[in-house]
Structures are given as C-alpha cells and as structure tokens.
Length: 221
Length: 115
Ligand SMILES: Nc1nc2c(ncn2[C@@H]2O[C@H](COP(=O)(O)OP(=O)(O)OP(=O)(O)O)[C@@H](O)[C@H]2O)c(=O)[nH]1
Ligand SMILES: [Mg+2]
Ligand SMILES: [Zn+2]
Image (cartoon, rainbow over the protein chains, first blue to last red):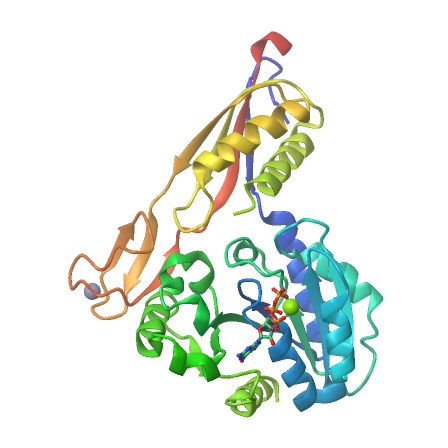
C-alpha cells in the first residue's frame, strides 16, 4: 500500500468493527429475505434471559427459533427445546460476547425453511459490557435487567443501555423484598435511549409476559 | 470490554493492508468516548498481541474524540467526553447520540530499520 518505498507512514483508515458489521449486514439480509424478525437479548448472567425465552416459546411455539450463546454447555438450548422451539447452541469457548460471524455459522446449520417461522431470538452471553459493541444483524435489541441487580445499573453500563430498543425489567415478583426504583430506572434509560419501550415482567409468574410477546408480535406482523 | 479481541482485530486489519508482518514504530487509532473501549486496557492488550503477531513493539497512539449529541429538550448540539454530561444550555440529559462510538485504525508507522 506504500506509494513510495521510502514512505514509512501507511494509511489504514479502517473501522475495527468492519468485519463484524459486514457479517451483520449479511445476516440481516438473509433473515429479511426469509421474513424472519430477529431479537438480540442482552443482560448480566442470571438476569433471566432463558426463562424469558421459555415463556416466549410457549407463546410463539414453532413460529420462533432460538440461538443460545453461552461460554460453555448446551443447557440453555435444551431448556428451549423442552419449551417447544428449535434451538441452536453456540458455545463461545471463553469469548464474552457473540459476534455476527458466530451467528452466521449458526444460521448455516439451522433449518430456517419452515413457512411458519417468523421470529428468531438470540440469547447473548451473559454480560452487560462486551455484547454491546457487536451488531448481530438483529432488528430489535432488548436489554434485560432483573430487579435484584439494583436500580443503579443503567448508568453504570451506558454503552449497552444507550443501544437498546426495548428494556425488559424482569423478576418483578421479587420487588416487595427490594428497594428497586422502577421509575428512576426508566427515566435513566430514556436519557440514554430516548425511544426505548419498557416492559416490567416476571418470567417466573408470567406477569406482563403476554403484553411483551404481543408487542414483539406487533413489530413484525 | 473485550479489548483482547479488539487488539486481535487490529493486527488482522494492519496485516491485511500491509500484506506482510513488519515491526512498527507507531499505530495511530481513533476512539470515540461512547465506544465502551478502555484506552488503558487496549494499550495493554495491543502491546502483547502486536509482539506475538510479529509487529514488534509499536507505541499505540490514541486520538480520543468528543461525542456529538443533540439535546431533545432545547435542540442544542453539543460535545461530550462521556455519557453523563448534560446539555450545556438547559441541563437536560435527554438527548440523541450523533457520534462518539467510532473505533478506527488510522495509520501505522513502519520501523525505519526495515525499509
Ligand atoms: N424470582 C424470579 N426468578 C427468576 C425470574 N426469571 C428467572 N428467574 C430465575 O433466575 C435464575 C437465572 O435465570 P436464567 O433464565 O437461567 O438466566 P439467564 O439470564 O439465561 O442466565 P445465563 O444464561 O447464565 O446468563 C433461574 O434460577 C431462574 O429461575 C423471575 O421473573 N423471577
Ligand atoms: Mg441463559
Ligand atoms: Zn438542552
């Protein structure tokens, strides 16, 4: 790339996320062509992503497929299959986030041909920091925060909560035991993502889940 | 953040553009303050990875930009170094992010001994 052999400065001018973003665009195109609407679910470990997806699996049935991202084990994919949906497990083997290339591989292996299929949910690796910089090709990014984690998390993890379309506040059944302030959480989240939609749910009791599922459904139908 | 994997991505990009592995003097990057990247952590990771990948021991020079935001209360466009700075006109923290997440490898300076 040196025009002049004696030139020691070489222009690179390349965004570091270029490769990921290219794969994300490919995923978005492929899924769009198949008429599949895609969600990227991000939260800290144990906030309830898989439990939310089990509840969604009961609502959507065969209309939904799931990609599970975990550092190790097929446990979450097995839980989703039991709940009635096709599931593909990505084991990142140490990586703290999914990237668009890993999702592309998963899509190559999954059966996306069913006429019924209209929703793909991707459960990211439990982590509030690293997944935020990686576009997977999703149509909707959902940040999930469970009330035992505390109501100070939004502003502590702005690089995630400034990129979400939907905030799902989970484990609302536990709120009587905690001092979690829902209103402050929503206000702080709106300061980072002005257009964010907020749902308060308990994936355990099912409270609020139908409203949330209907919202997701209305986003693609 | 995942500075280690970003450092790997950087050496991959540099290797692709140069078409070879040569010791470097400097690597110049631009980082937006809302990118979530820790400059210190990136420097640490990049130093290790660059050496491992055959690019010598370049200095990583980081150009940290300011984010551009627009206040949704009063419409003022302003610059900020983090997510917490409110509108300088009305104090509101309700705003839209116009830029500030960028992360690019701008240029590299090849160790002259190699030319
Ligand atoms: N009380 C209560 N517990 C919940 C709720 N949702 C999930 N849990 C529990 O929280 C724990 C973690 O839930 P998971 O769904 O496995 O969380 P996850 O986010 O998928 O976790 P990782 O995949 O490991 O990051 C389990 O014991 C769930 O039963 C809820 O709404 N209320
Ligand atoms: Mg899980
Ligand atoms: Zn203002």
